Picture 1 (cartoon, rainbow, N blue to C red):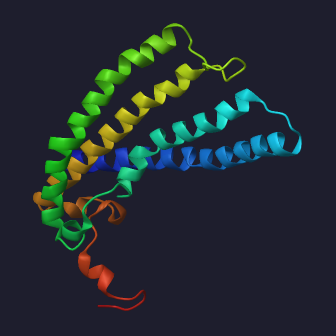
Picture 2 (cartoon, helix red, strand yellow; picture 1 turned 30 degrees about the horizontal axis):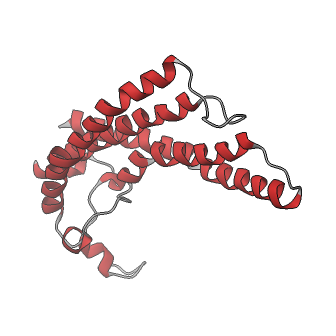
Length: 192
């Protein structure tokens, strides 16, 4: 059980770090987009590679931080049943969801994404636009980054669920445990 807890902490830490680093791409995306708008409407000029850049930054950010979003429970789910459920029921739902839906999805993304990424690297694919950004092959690699980070976070979720079902949730740090639905019933500072 210690190994499952260590794995959950390791993957959570990895996705947290990736999320913290890649979330800065949002600022870069806004700044590049602002620059493109100023160029176009103030100076009546345009730089095609910059137009590619802010789209690529957004694509890299959203695919790269998907595992971080899964770690934070920011993905869409039916909270009507999940949120008020006790930790054991959440663990069962997560384990079933990871095994039946998430891991097969990640497998499909990797299986169909890998040949496209390998082909792109094979001829160092760049933008389809003349004067656009070089290095589209790097952006396409984020498809595989997405599959790996989401897949690892899914395995960490399954490990956490197994720990809860085995009664060993206390091996995890508080930020990786399931929230207690009763914690949300009391205002901040009030002790139940």
